[in-house]
Every structure is written in structure tokens, then in C-alpha cells.
Length: 168
Image (cartoon, rainbow, N blue to C red; front, side, top):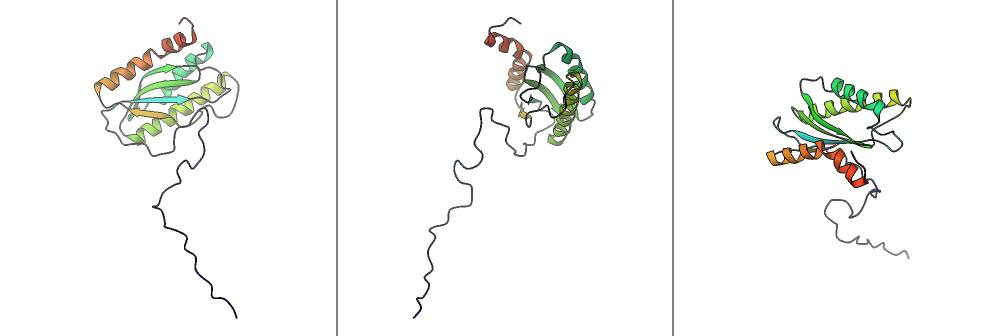
């Protein structure tokens, strides 16, 4: 005589969602998450940070600075996007930009990244990607945030030099 199968209970179902602590672990240099960027009004400037890959020469090298300035000038010839201020560090760049909306910001940053990569690869006779990951953006919504971001961007080289014990 055959036994009747018994249906097992799998326990209470959890709410939909991901496991806690699931996913790829963050490394020593965490990347910018792939989330859609927040919308913002035209009147708000943005503080953007671009990081370059390991092994790419310093963005502050003498032969590259002029090319980077030209790259930024070409990348910013747009009606819906404008680069206002920037600061180059060894492995990253800080930018203060103005854009009509998040789509204009994306297109403008894509243009700047493309021109920057071409300049770096041309000057150092290399090929391949230059930027490490997506750009990090922070929308500056108050006058105090704009002032602090401007001070940070314009005085960033001095801060990094002081931290490394060098004179600027």
C-alpha cells in the first residue's frame, strides 16, 4: 500500500525584498551605485566628481593640463549644460556644473568624460577606458551648499597638498 504524500509547509513568506547584506561586497574603493539620478530644477548647480582608473597617469601632469582645459571647453559647448568651475587632482576631478535637467547633465558629463579620455589617451599614448566608474553628483540646493562646494572645489589642491605634507 502506497503512502499518501504530505505537503510540507515552507514557512511564512517574507515581504518582497532583498536579503540583508546580499549582493556584491564593497571593496576598498566603493563605486557609485547604479540608481537613477534624482531630478532637479534648472536653478540648482551640481557638484560632480569624476574618478580615473588605477594606472592612469595623474591629471595634474604638466603635459595634460592644457589638453584637459581644451577638453572641458569642447565638452561644454552646449546650450543645456555648462561647466562653471573645476579642480584637477591626481586621480579625480571635481566639477561645478549647471544643467537644465538630469538628462542634460548626463549628456554633458558623457561629453566631458569622452573628451577627457581622448585627451589622456592621446597625450600618454595609451588606449582603453580612463574613468573608473560613474560620476558622483550632488545637487546644491541652498546658498550655503553652493558656497561650501565652491570653497571645496577651488581649495581642494591645497587641502590634498597639506594632507600629503607638500607645499602647493
